[in-house]
Amino acid sequence: MLAESQYQPAGDPLDRGELTVGTPIDANSSPEIAEKLASSSAVQKNSLDEYVHFQRRIFFATIVVSAIAVSISFFWFPISTSSSLLIGALCGVLYLRLLARSVGKLGKSSKTVSKIQLVIPVLLVLGVSKLPQLDLLPSLLGFLLYKPSLILQVMLESSNQEESKH
Amino acid sequence: MDSITTAASVVAAGLAVGLGAIGPGIGQGSAAQGAVEGIARQPEAEGKIRGTLLLSFAFMESLTIYGLVVALVLLFANPFAG
Image (cartoon, rainbow over all chains, first blue to last red):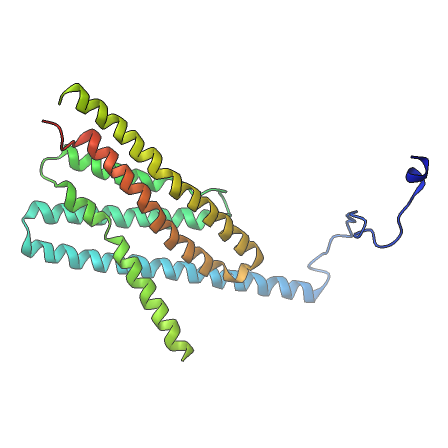
């Protein structure tokens, strides 16, 4: 015990598990550090811009697919079916918007992905079941129209990446 | 709607939401953990990581939505209600 308390290990303090805090780095004092910080923040901003562009492409694809599906249903099905499909597609776009916003907030202002977007299908099913003018099945199909647009968008992006590699 | 059908519908609705949310919940948690770790390691790839996370969340959460829709249909637009 006495020998152990007297023992002082030599060498690097980090090897002994000790954490030494040095003097804080002032970005204004060194132009190289300030330049590195500015370049890293610019890279991060470009990366976030990429996410915003990705969101826009997804919304555009969803709106295009929904418009095509609703316009086809106006010719083939009665007006109640196509209006239900339209309402479901609008709810799907809103759901995707809320999901993208909660994913954008993840790690910055919130630690978990919020579940507020799940209110949209609940309200859709409740509203459709209460209103006799609307049908349940077309509205659910319209709500799920965001999935084919997402698959389409991913396939287009992967094909573009393969073309750019070749 | 008789009482047995009502009781069975309520139990089935609870099971649909409860069991249907287990898998996507675990998957979303692990996906979010991986994404946040990836962003912390590579901040320059944040946009791509968030885009991939959005896609995976959209596909994972649809499983929860299926269970939710089945539960709501059983509760508010029950096809077995005579």
